[in-house]
Image 1 (tube, rainbow, N blue to C red):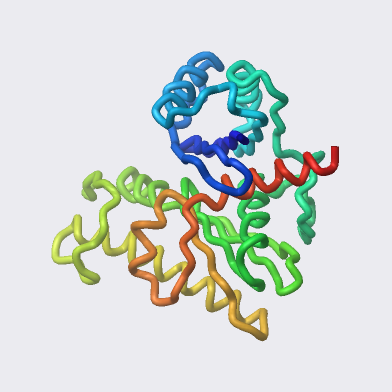
Image 2: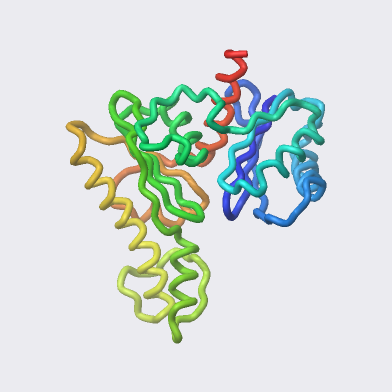
Amino acid sequence: MIFTLSIGNSTINMGCFEDDRNIFTASISTFRKLTSYEYANSISQILKLHNISNCKIEGAIISSVVPVLTNTLKETLEFLFSCKVLVLSSGIKTGLNIRYKNSRELGSDFVCNAVATLSKYKTPCVIFSLGTVTTACVIDENGVLLGTSIMAGLQMSLDALCTNTARLPEIGIEKPTELIGQSTIDAMSSGLIYGTASMLDGMVDKYSKLFSQELNVVVTGRYTKYVLPYCERKYIYDENLNLRGLNLIYKKNQKHR
């Protein structure tokens, strides 16, 4: 059984895979000041909830966009599972053909999502990830990762809206009741959700002009459920795209040992 861990800016997502079968997924909040033992306690409790013994874990792999936590979580997994822990970095084989000015700048989340997408979906394609930031990754018909776009995420946009205005209230992320808001709160929800949905549709329209065939669009990330129902286009929702990509990368590197 392989343990996969994706360290994000707001949440740390984790899951176990047996071959290509996902046994479970879970997430905890990202706290930069927690120690490896504190994280070990949280992960141990989650494993117990899913009736998974530590001794069943044969290997582990981490991707991280929070460098300060990478070694902390690596120590955590080594302590819990007594196995070698792979960290997705420039020395890890992914099989991706990346056309980027500096491939070292490409976030590990983009890499995982691309590997998982190429294993399951047709190209050319766009991968949207709706998390702390909203990202897009474009892959051409030959499976080449052409590049990315990075935009403010839903919570980031909402925080900026509330913090930088005098009269707008603090609200949570909610599904809008109407397109044209009849109250301040309804107007904010409409702008946030419909605005993000329109941005996705608009970006796909622009990306599509680069290709002579229809694009597949895969969407993942914690805020997808709020936005997807309001998009005009049909998108593929893949909840565990990132963790599945990590599992595939782990297996690829075992073959090369």
